[in-house]
Figure 1 (tube, rainbow, N blue to C red):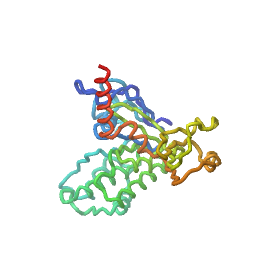
Figure 2: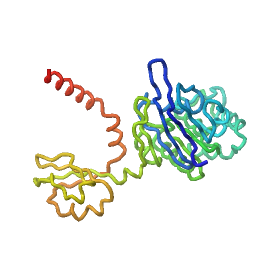
Figure 3: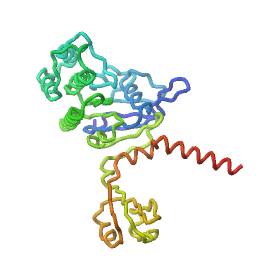
Figure 4: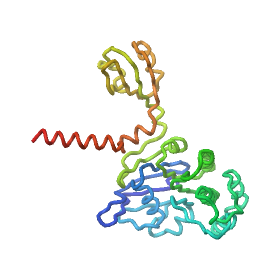
Length: 311
């Protein structure tokens, strides 16, 4: 099956709180698929509903064709899940924790666990109760990434890890993809999503509000320059790819779409100074969906003022 994960109108309600609002989604085999949004956006609720830990209020979800309500055991047999708040047996040593998980998944080879532990610089002889928060996170990652199941779900996998270990975890995610596994990568760290994901959805108040391929971001740039020339009349052949953001006071800001090489002849003819072109990364898209609090408050104040003026 090419479609590893599928949902239709999946909904989760807690009384008057709509934690998940009619989410329809497909994830295909071999993807690293990102779930992006702030805390409370619905990422963990979506994952836990898919795994059968929460009962949906409406709609349905399937993993590898297994119904997430009626076939929860089968769903968990083909899925390895790292929760955002992983709990481990405190009195066990790290090696004993991994032996426990391996006993439930016979396809896991002990050598694989040892290799992962070495790469993450994890001491498996220490008891969990004496491990730091970061060490416990590493142990949970070894238990999950050591599995050969078709689908791996990682909820904030790099939390509490130092930058070096974070990079190693991202490398392991890419390796899992190369081995044919599908990875759901839930995070609110934009740089990690950009680095490892093929596709991402942004959640807001339980809704999937935007979906995009990360390759699309490589074709989007913003130009900053100083110039007294009026650029309001952009050549017609470029109007679908060049958008004026603002100009005035000697400043010009343009958004550029598509391959830059075809725009260079026109750009090179302009009387720019202090020219700067930046790639518009995921941060730009994220802020469109989740504006900074100050911007939101300013818009609310402006709307309130407009209403008062109208009266």
